Structures are given as structure tokens and as C-alpha cells.
Length: 342
Image 1 (cartoon, rainbow, N blue to C red):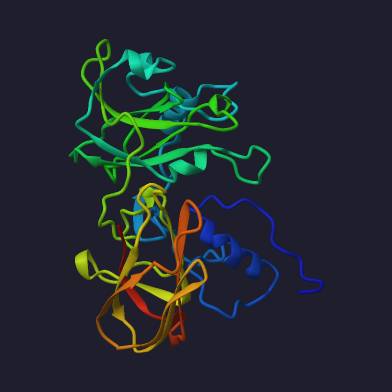
Image 2: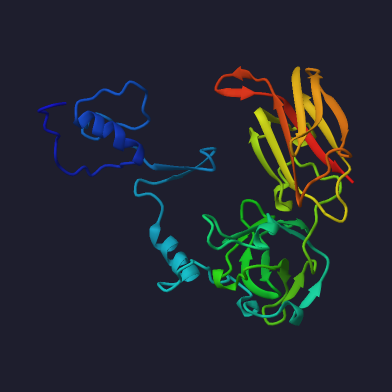
């Protein structure tokens, strides 16, 4: 407020980020019109919190610590071990194990083809535009087979040479991220390979396929396991339900984009709806496949692509419908599965 002098001083209490806004509001004499999780630090009548809480994974998970928060010394030491003290411009981590594989040829390694590993959006790295707003950097993938009960080591090769060694996540044991040095990318014709690594460090064994991994023929493009095969979704909410009954609501217009094999292009699209009850238009690259009313419950159909062949290396399928408002959400139709029929 005008003419009001904010209190000064240092507060030696357990403070969290949520206390900043209410503290500023109290200091300037403003009463917030909405509930706030924090407390004004200028008001000593509020009891001090016994610890700190850190929320992550879209606030669905919480970690709690004592008054001083997590220990930073161990975290800093680990960061220095991974990235070094200086000179690592692109934060390329030091391999936690199997460092001897770095910058070695894939052909020089012992390879067994008993693992299936998919690299997400692998086609994006084939011909990168280094002048674009976004350029290739981190590589993300998923180990489909074998399934492990502890983190596994993964080697990633760019153009036939191993350029990154990483480890799968501790919370999702089949997923990994890798960071090759950006200098290894060519302007075109890049190839990517990923291998699970086992055995002693002086005699490692690589497990995987020699070439890129294609998706299974009955891949549900709506599933949470479709993204490693280059599938992207726009205009959909997160899945409702679990397992085979899971589906995604559109926001009125949902787009499914998937790469297609030019040697075996799809001939039809199989669609399974869990929720309908309105008029729906389904198109492939703007070409109408279906336009009509669908029932409120389950609805399945197979739509021919004979008049709408994929024009390029990707196929976009669009679901357009009216919407019903439910709270803050605009719900169109609930799509359970979309499968390309070959």
C-alpha cells in the first residue's frame, strides 16, 4: 500500500518457496483473494514447519526432508563425478560403467541379438537441421526386452561408433536417456543403434539389433508404449483407466501422427472408441475416412485407406467432434486404440 514501509530483517525459520508470495502480500498490506499454501514470514504467530516437502512428477509424488532440506554435499559430489568441474559445455555425462566402450566401433564388439530396444523419434536424427530452433541433443529410448528388475546399462551408437553409455532409470527400469557429444552428428544420413551391455568391463557384451527397431504390426498408437516408435499425439488428455480398458479423450480435435514403412504402407486404419455419443469426422491427411454419428459406448470400425494413401513417410489421423464440458476439461470422444492395418 502507498506510504507503507515493509518490515526489514532476517528470519531464521524453516522457509519454503510457497512462503514467498504470502510474505510479499503481507509486507505490502495486500490480502490475497485466494487460498495460499504458504504463510507470511513477517507474522511470527504461525508455527514453524518441522521439515520440507519436495513435489515432483506433476506433484503426484512427494519427498520429505528435515528442516535443512536434502543434503547438498553428496548431490554436488555426484554431479562433479558425472560432468566434471569445467569444460563440459554440453553436459555430456561420464559413463558410470563401461567407459572403455566410448568412441569404439560397434563392429569391433561382441554382439548378441537377444534384446529389443527402441529409440524414440529415431527418424528425427536422420537429417537434422542445425539452423532450426530445435536440434537433436538427448536421445531417449525404451528397453522392450529383456525386462529387468534393476537398472541396466545401455550403449548408444551414432553412425557405427559408440558415443554414449548410460543407465536405465531407477524408477522406470526400461527407459533411458543418453547424451552424445553434438559434434558427432552429420548433416544427413545419421544412423542410431542402442544395446544393453552386460559382462565384465574388460569384456563387455552388447545385446540388441544391428538396425533400427520397427514397431509391432498391431501397435496401438494410443498406448503409452507407442512413443519410442515415433508416434506423437496432439489434442488428447492423459489416459483414463488402466490396461486394455484405458482410453484418451480428445479435446474436440485430436491428431495421431505415426511413421509408415514406404515398403509396406498401411491399407486401413482400425479404430476402437470407448466413448462417443456425437457426430465424428475421421480424416487421414485431410482425406475423409468417416463422417457420421457414433454411439455413446464402445464402437469399432476398420476404415480403408485405398482412397487416402499416405503421401509421405508419416501419416496423420485426425478425430474431430463436438465437445462436452466436464469441469475444466472439454471432452470430445474417448479413443481406446488406433492400429494401422498392413
